[in-house]
Amino acid sequence: MQRRAFLRGVAGSVALGTAGTVAGVETTTAHPGPYSPLGSIPVENAREAVPDPSGKYAYVAATDGFAVVDVQIPSDPRLVFEKRGLLSDRETGPLRLIQDVKVEGDRLVAAGPANPIQGDVLQGFVLYDVSDPANPSQIAFHETDFPIHNCFIRDGIVYLTGNNGATNPLVMVDVSDGNPEEVGRWSLASRNEAWREVPSGVWTLHDVWVRNGTAYLSHWDAGTYLVDVSDPANPQFRARIGGRPLGELRKIPSEEARIHVIRLPGNAHYAMTNEDGSLLGINKEAWAADGKGGPGGIDLWDASDPGNPRKLSTIDPPATSSPSIGGTWTTSHNFDIVGNRLFSSWYQGGVKIHDISDPANPTELAWWRMPDEASFWTAKRASERFFVASSYGRRDNGKGGLYTFPIEDARNKPQKDPPALTTTGGNQSANRATETATSGEAALSGDTTTAESGDTTDSSAGSASGLGISAGVAALLGAGAWRRYRE
Image 1 (cartoon, rainbow, N blue to C red):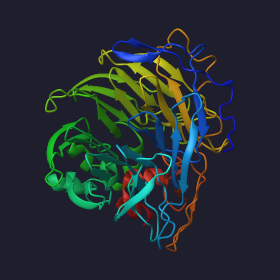
Image 2 (image 1 turned 180 degrees about the horizontal axis):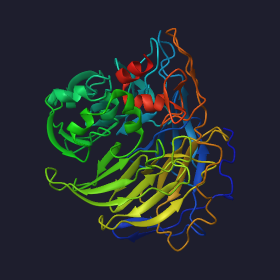
Image 3 (image 1 turned 90 degrees about the horizontal axis):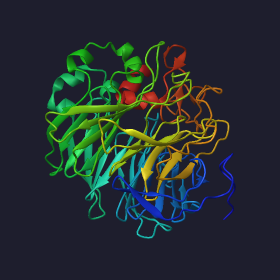
Image 4 (image 1 turned 135 degrees about the vertical axis):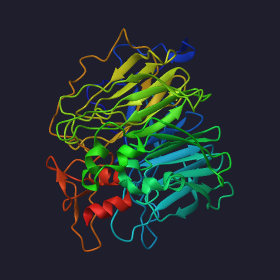
């Protein structure tokens, strides 16, 4: 297999040495020199990346498929499997805009499309057997009537973001016997019909994460909802944390929804807890709009009593001189909490490690960025020695890839001469795969920056501050709201 140098300005590879223990978490101690990646490998159109339970392999969503990377030697990651054009043999295939994959044991889920696409488009998730990571085999496909921005798998249940523009439900599908079957749904609108009076994009279900029978639902401006899914056929509301009051959201005119989707307050994007559920991280993905607002950070909450949560601290985003969607992105994106460490991604703002042993006073241990090269989608711990981080690249370098980073306290050896976070030609998602309209409407173009996907932009949509409504924002608005905007 031909491999090429991927990192610019990082010479050679760095071997890992022995591990030590700091604040109850093992960290590498033999990564000499200023803090930098251990290794990297190109993965075209990379999006979410998740390591398997062993930490030996990482699975990477790749927009039109997925890749498997062997990271057993973090300084020399190797591509061992890549599949593109999933389900291309189907009449409405292939499955497109695959931005999320999740793994549990020997089961992998690849879902899409992340955003609404016009026309008769295949939607759903593919279930794979990855007991041999270098040779995944398809078990089943479950088709849906909604796009899937994010998914999760726990105890044989696949959890889907079912944004349909009306009820935006959490959808649960049992895959335990290899034959997917929907077993339950839960929706804000089912609990309170008044949500139907709020523009659906403002309370889109952006992401879902599950632990110990509780689903943590990131409902954008509506906040984070905790739902008991111990019986997926009978989900029950537990608590709501953060979010804007329903009465306030009901007053938003539909024509102003886009600004509210982009800009703080609100924007609950992703949530997860520590091992015992007592500490909850909630991040905000946001940009400036109409000259107001800016990037979002990560809030840490005491959730030991979900009915009485207490915000402990906020990790602020890296500062940027151009915080709009068309500028330099430094807003928080996907993160990971393991033990006393928080691993975070900030798009062009890079990746970070924080010590959260005192969650009221998180301490930054390491930070690496290369804004002209990398725009980081996620950061996930692979083992006690290193974490993986996927970058979806930049318009000028066009590829994206997977990086490995040491887990260490690098306060005494920060990145050497880190580049400034200034605008260098606009943001810059790489590989803008243009989707062609098939329903007689205007073709989708890739001329303006898109929120999260970088895949499609509708040039016929209205604009604010000179920006067309992107398909990424369309995903946040929800399929139904997107159609209404187009009309």
